[in-house]
Length: 425
Ligand SMILES: Cc1cc2nc3c(=O)[nH]c(=O)nc-3n(C[C@H](O)[C@H](O)[C@H](O)COP(=O)(O)OP(=O)(O)OC[C@H]3O[C@@H](n4cnc5c(N)ncnc54)[C@H](O)[C@@H]3O)c2cc1C
Image (cartoon, rainbow, N blue to C red):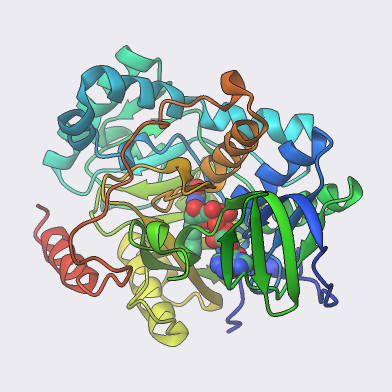
């Protein structure tokens, strides 16, 4: 069993030579995931000089490790919570913008001519209890009526056309959603940026940033750069040197496995429509066919904040077999994990603090959103108010008293969610 992402077999990480950071630059971007690369693309296209620093190898963070599932992510926003905090109108604005995220990524890939195996397969969400089904169906109807979300409610009698699993009591299909190959997407973005002269420095962690009269000085172990503006795109990997953002994101580990190849007739029975999938449990489980349709890639919350591949593989395989008992004897070829960034209001945040621009906090749904908010951040830095505007602009980026960036309490919260899931609450 490999302990690197399945995706890297087809889009390997490169051995990047050490490059000394430039002495001066217009824009310095910290973090070479989708947020940082997308911001860099927008900024470099307008003629500015841009450098991107990456602490690890390129794709070290979540962007080349994720499930590649693309959606609007509105059900992750905690609609009731948002309404309570920001009112119905603002919440609707946020949801309406979110509905466009999949179209955004579709257009982005097309206009940039990036082949990343993107397919609008639709997303199936299964309901694990009759109560969950009622809630899920009415939530879908609301989204359909208020924001034009396309899809259908699947009654329990019609499930066999959607899934080979017997554990659901109905479900909902979101037609607009789909999947892509995240590591191919990441590699193609890197190639595109290099082609337009953006310097991307791997193994070059930014250790501190000082504000000066002329802008900023960015410090790394390989050298120092003077930059007019700095964008922080470090999401769940944000370190304590960036205290403001560090205190506002909750890093959680998400893990995935890839199965050994599955016989085509079994694959066709388990995932007849080849959709990306999830279900109604609180502790997220997500799964999809590999882009070539030969395997299942199955993900969920990891066993702890530290990586534990063997334990994660066992737990994810067991969770997968609860849904698809036919896979009991199917082996695991890959297990891997990465960090996702939750926020206290379940929404991503984009803004500026002490002159440093940032976009982060995608709550485990960042393939489309990081690319989208990275682009918005680029426009904001350019001073393009219209194209930089988003409904997420003025959401206060909350922290909690005594939260210093170490989510020590999350195992307790997650255990409570596990118990709630077991009892179908
Ligand atoms: C296992 C897993 C499965 C997921 N599945 C999905 C999915 O199916 N669909 C979906 O939409 N989302 C998914 N996500 C979430 C998604 O991958 C992320 O939200 C998204 O990639 C975030 O992109 P980013 O560019 O903001 O951050 P990242 O890609 O994490 O990039 C941040 C980078 O900043 C670098 N960095 C940090 N500090 C410094 C520093 N001081 N100096 C230089 N560099 C620094 C890090 O090394 C890292 O590479 C998943 C995530 C994981 C881990």
